[in-house]
Amino acid sequence: MKQLKKLFLSIPFLVMGLFFISTNEVSAGTGPEGDCGAKVWTDYTNYYMPGAKTVDFYVSKPSSSCDGSVYYDVRIEKKYSFGWQFTTLNVPLNGEFAFRTPTKQIDIDKYFGSSGTYRINILMHNGQQIADGEVESHDIYIHY
Image (cartoon, rainbow, N blue to C red; front, side, top):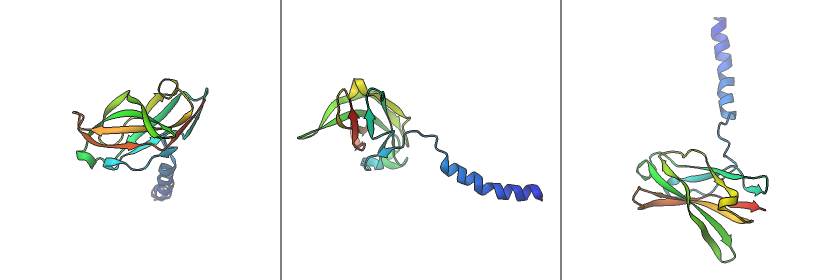
């Protein structure tokens, strides 16, 4: 009987612990919900050089949206006075996912290159480049 009482008393603490344990380091910010209900999550909003090396991100969506699994291409956009413009159309971090991509890393020196405001753009498609939609991260600030 004492063991059963201890079990019942420990269950609320175990459940609370699950809410506070996070195995995902990429959680500083997300952009607005895009097509397929997808969102892009990044580890930070500001990246200060030379200390920062990569922008870590992942993409998630409801598993049933866009007919389940989708392919994706990673692109980088930079903000200019006249608006947003793609600086890199194909970062080689493409793949396929149904619910969440693995956490990916984009090399800052290689793909961002200068101070400014950027965002990660994800093009989702069916494998034959027929677009299912796209989603963008929140603004990312690179400081050299």
